[in-house]
Amino acid sequence: IGGQMLLLAPSATLNDETGVLQSWFDTDHTRWAILRPDRYVFAKGTRPAEAADALDLLFHQLRPERPQAHGRRHAQETAR
Image 1 (cartoon, rainbow, N blue to C red):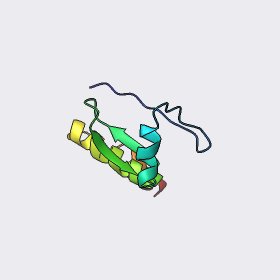
Image 2 (image 1 turned 90 degrees about the vertical axis):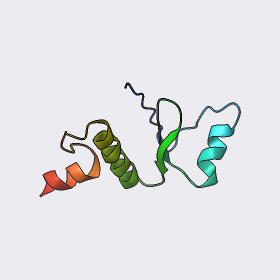
Image 3 (image 1 turned 120 degrees about the horizontal axis):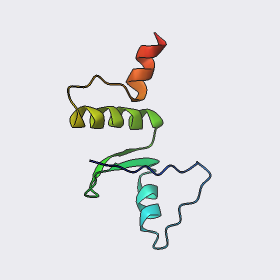
Image 4 (image 1 turned 180 degrees about the vertical axis):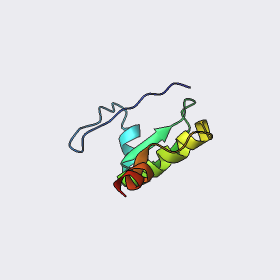
């Protein structure tokens, strides 16, 4: 379906001329968000582990026949 990723370093400043995005992130201390192509929010959260779980869910929903190969669950399996 195509996708884009925007990563900001913790010290990066979001160039948000209207302040809408910064306000949205600040409201509940959101550190990351995954938006669908239609711009609806798929998931958001504050911890990297939550992002890994959300990506696992997203990949599973997009391709349910594929084994999970991303995120925290994969890292835990390969560490064993």
